[in-house]
Length: 262
Image (cartoon, rainbow, N blue to C red):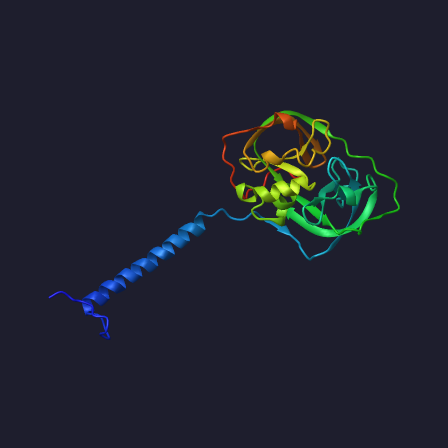
């Protein structure tokens, strides 16, 4: 006679109990295996950070165009061709720093802010009201060196989130946030699909692109043809927004940091 479970009995029949135990163990094993597969299948986070709550002091030269940047002298490299580290500047929240640095272009200043960094670049979120000029004459802007025409495929991201405030700071999951940041004046950068190159996007005249001009292309796979250039360690790409077009390539968040710094 086959074992039959009766609910009001204190124990199930031995054969049925062994069968249930095996099923439970198998389900536990499958659950752990599936969890491990999901974890290992996830892409690792980028090596980036936002030092929120950790205020630092900085000294350097403000360069207001195309996007606010602080040039900080590198010790021991005075007189060399590239003697400054370049920190993009932004305001708190989803706002650029144009209004904060107005009137300080070319001036050596002291300011406070929170550091944002990734292997591919650094940024400072300025503490409003913290900028004070130092007693030094205005400095000339670094020359821009043209590199020629390039055609690249990738994604437009907002530099603030991508460099460390959000993780991941690119891809479809970040599209709405990136669109709002760029519309608020955060400098846009272009990252190639393989993550090997990135460019600070500027207009054909080398100036900042209008904040809302890139809205429909943010976090979308696009192909860009433009004129590449370099100012110090910053690589830029002059593009005509009207000539941008979507591509069928797939954009996914990538933890790889491009070779070229912002």
